[in-house]
Length: 190
Image (cartoon, rainbow, N blue to C red; front, side, top):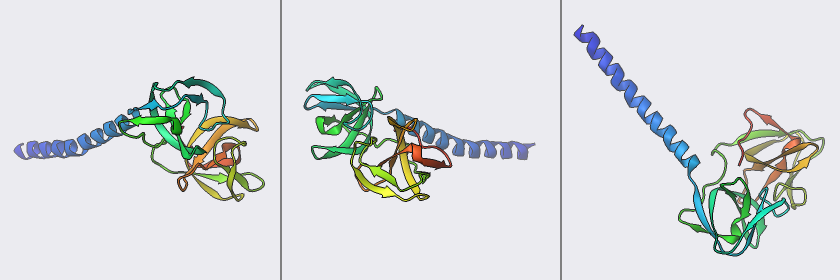
């Protein structure tokens, strides 16, 4: 009987030692995902429906306004700055017109890399932003695999509004999801 009690206590202690840190890790990841950042608008800035100047203007902020930022992505360069901030509203502004208050925002996505295969009949245009008006920066051959970070809704291509942000070299790299087949799980929204 005493042996059973000791074994049971040891099992409970071991389970607690494993489960509690996992719970703390989950809480930490959830807290980071829920973290918001602040920014002060340095010049008047347009609010866009996607991270590109070619996206629909859905509002604006005046100089001096404090905004709440969720995360950032690389996109089309605006006056030397290729970062775009996702606001708490789900809309976007160019980071060129925002000064961080406190810590700089984290990058959007969940930190994982997703894979998609180019399914177009020809090479797929890789653009600086999620719109065909954004300059083409390269192309991906038909059948090639792409490393994807996250997705946004932007310009509709053949009935599909989704655009994928690719992992890149510090610049915006976007493709229309219309011509990409996910291999495994679909990427999260940016």
